Length: 417
Image (cartoon, rainbow, N blue to C red; front, top):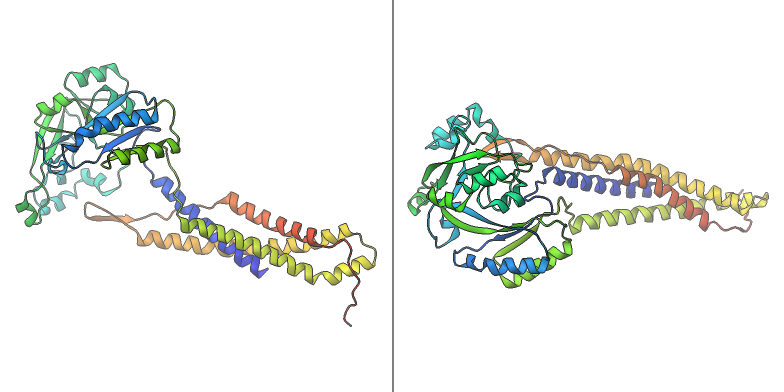
């Protein structure tokens, strides 16, 4: 029984820890694209490399078949014109309206910034955001196809507003009096870097905007290329995306990615397939080993119980008991031993993974904007179906093994004494 208990305890410990880890991954998972969407991200570092993206787009559409309408995605940059390297262009972000914005975002010095965090409007900056994001960016340049594919917006009025030069905003607290503020931040100069000041020069631009409802707001703002250039921003190609009517298989996505890697290693293809539980080789090995040991322990317990009951079986045979009765008795004895070991092993094995998850959560801290905002929450998940199978299946296996291994005919033996 001790062997069964130890084996079951190990299997339970590994099972609970792994189930808890998967549940944590599930809760922390945030999709970066709408379901089944296909995105091609251009990771080239120079503007010249970006000219090759057209050939890569054609290869994607050829490899994956009918993907539907294509949306080309561009980003606004702080510096207008072509930059020698993409990361030298700066970036543009959409700001909340002045009455909703945290004052820390407008502070000029670290002292002002620290004091501003006490403002109630900054409360949201001290917690993890629940807003959806995408792999391209939060402030985008595109056309009606981008509204369809990324934001699931099929509103003719919104499309007309976009064509008329207005920015479309998909999150609250950004639009005030029909305008939205866009903040452009240039890369820091070498003098700023030498002074440990990595915040580049910023300037704000206001553009006409309308707030639009999106069932899945994967971005904050979308504007046309003409609107971005009129506001003085640069335009940078970032990639393309599609939203096929039929979901792609993992094999199709893998094959297309391998093909693209041969054409251009600066592009990245991703398909939003929803949450997929990650399981490393070590975890898989531990689960398999624990299950194997539990079965082995059940076999050992069965053999030992069968050996100990040989004299009892011989006595039953002497008084005329049939082979079926002897098999049932042997199976019952082994089943009871395995069941007791499984129950005790379950109770003992549940404690270590729970304690380990709690300890890991206490040692894990969240930092946002240089402030520790708290500890991680311990997530405990119990694989009830697996444990029930273990509790029921192991004794049943042990009982069946004992019944099958018990001989129908047994020789009489002399009892000692």
